Amino acid sequence: MIKFLDLQKINMLHQKEIEQKLLETFRSGWYLLGEETKLFEQNLAGYIGVKHAIGTANGLDALRLILRAYMEMGVMQPGDEVIVPANTYIASVLAITENGLKPVFAEPDETTFNIDLTKIEESISQRTKAIMIVHLYGQAVFSDALQNLAQKYNLKIIEDNAQAIGAVWNGRKTGSLADAAAFSFYPGKNLGALGDGGAVTSDDDRLAKTLRALANYGSETKYVHKYKGLNSRLDEIQAAVLNIKLQYLDAENQKRREIAEFYINNIINPKIKVPAWPAKPESHVWHLFVIRCTERDRLQQYLTDNGIQTQVHYPIPPHKQDAYREYNTLSLPVTEKLHNEVLSLPISPVLTQEEIQTITEILNKF
Ligand SMILES: *Cc1c(COP(=O)(O)O)cnc(C)c1O
Image (cartoon, rainbow, N blue to C red; front, top):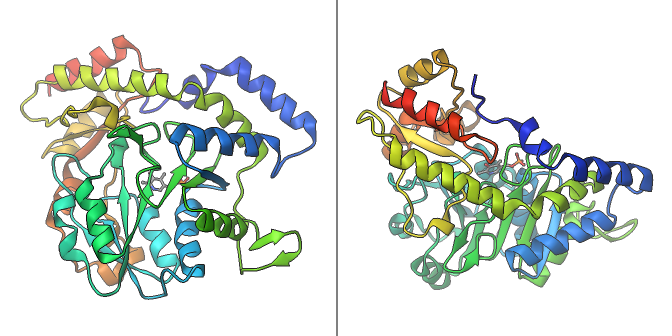
């Protein structure tokens, strides 16, 4: 059986280094807000090319905290609107509604799965305060026109960079393109911890200071609480693992690119639509390799029967979920069509050439 994602194999690539560091961290007796986290924040800020990186407990918290910080800073108020791609993981939307803000769903571009940059302006209203972009499946989405739009309407741009760490747009890394960015180190992400973890990056001093306090019980000085904060910290063990794995991220992303290129060149079944190879390969880190098929469910069953695990990202868009009943009647045809057709194939730095070949051959026989 070819697994969708073999996390054990992925982490075993760095077994010696990780095991030694885990033991060291365990023996240090210091488990939160210590040297490893501080070092990881420096490493991440340096890697992304920003002034600040702040560790959080997970990616959802990173997103929530960015919006919460903007609210504490008076940039937005409850009831204000945030434009968000309709085609995203629910976390992007949860971060908005948890802060009492209103999500305004924007349709994707069918060829990239990412928010259609040409259609954002029509979603802007008097109450719009931010645009949340999601670099979905690992592909950077940005443009000078988007930046101009934000300037024209005085909007913040927030990057949900949970899936695209290491992607480069016009010489700059995702996570450094806009006002603030959220990262996830969920084990299955391109830079995965051994549990939950997240981070926020930004060049904005005030945002960074506010957010760091919010993530630590609203406190800048121990037992003095400026905000009704939360507890959302990256722990020392996760930071230690991430410090090791960050060194290999570019090489592992390159491996994903090679697999994606092989799939694109060799899957030739007319029933299957493969994603486009991006004009700038560095703009995509292939967190997921997503094909489209109008007979998606039958194709998935066929692959399962042939020993290939796949997943659907995602089967139900946020606006069709029970959690968002108030948006269930919205019609977002591009998003809804994509959700019925997408299928994610195995892709990871440990997938072998033989496995990729087998997957391709079986797909071509469907
Ligand atoms: C994984 C993910 C998140 C949430 O990250 P967690 O660490 O699981 O909380 C947010 N947005 C997107 C697009 C994601 O893929």
